[in-house]
Length: 143
Image (cartoon, rainbow, N blue to C red):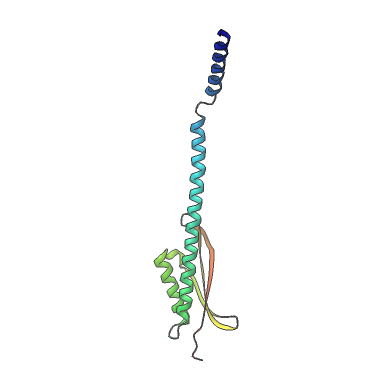
């Protein structure tokens, strides 16, 4: 019986010695996991922001192209409409390079609005002219 108790004490001592070498490792693991999860969350949020800005600029360009094709409108009016929509939605820095021009798509006359804007990489800061979108709309005719 004495030997059995002695073996149990040795096992307990070995377990205690093993665990004492890992003291504080839970805190270190927690910090590493939380920092990784925080980084991944921020990257997903940044991707969502970049996609939101792209979709907003594309929608504004499409609306500007449709506006420019109206019978009583013009190319400068379509470009200005695009600038106004972008400025209202996300800011004036994204509406500095807007070009409206006539074009042909599938054999039909169109108005093309091209917008070059910064591509946000960290918050709203990013690569200047890194995002380019083009929207086309068919020109109205009375034929």
